[in-house]
Length: 336
Image 1 (cartoon, rainbow, N blue to C red):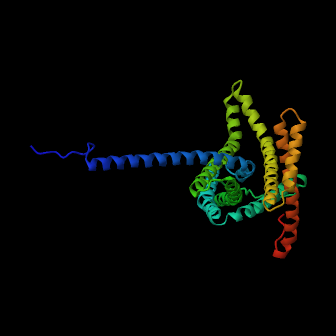
Image 2: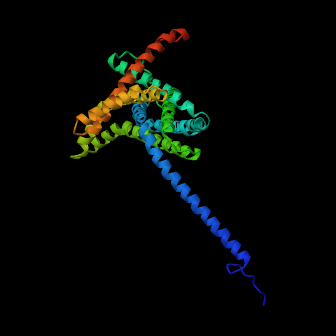
Image 3: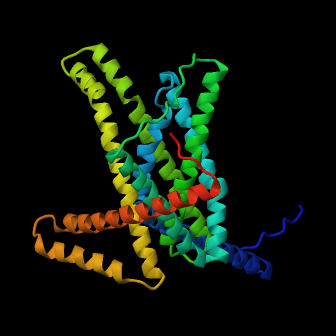
């Protein structure tokens, strides 16, 4: 009868070596699992903080996007939003995320200057919107009266999508820069995971909200036609209320843009060695917190937010003046 060799867990040196190797491997697996769990927890916490910091731009992004589908065929609204969302994801994950990681790894000192320039851009855009609200001017209609399914209709849709993706690129760059500035993880893997999570979450949040907004009136019409003691009034209220809601959303987006832009400028000045404005606004907020016993946290936040928005408005006005002076030098003409 042949002798079957022992596969040693029994006392041989080979068995001991095998057991030691298995135990060492298990220790390594457990250690890697702990590191992965810690990284995931850390990334989730960092992503939450980064997303909160970028909230103002997210609001503005959601407020700006619906205008790109205005005037187009209703059945093309969701496909167009889908195309813009896909372009936004590519902006964030294929271009901005690698650039942000390279920046954080090899030139972290550039993050604050980039944020400062982005803050100026947001302040300028916010000021332009306020100026348009106060002194509206006639704008040439860009929505052509074209027949659905024609090359002209496709061209118009393509132009709208391309314009939306260009605007998204600028806002996404600012979102990723803000997110990067809040990440204190030392390793590039966690930074990459956080930026990817922020990019995915914000994209789905913004364009999911936009899809709901642009289809709300259609849903209201369906409810009204369906009838019923509850659904019909709700449907009519949706149809009547959406224009006012969109106008309100535009105002909120403008304030958010000024608030975020001004806040970035104030914080950047502190990093550059001029902390006075940041300390002053903090003192104002704390004074309001101490003076108001009810909802003191909210009013303290509101004080700082309004102060930042005013700074953004002033900075935006200054940039607008500079841009107006520079336009003739580059042969730019005022759009009518």
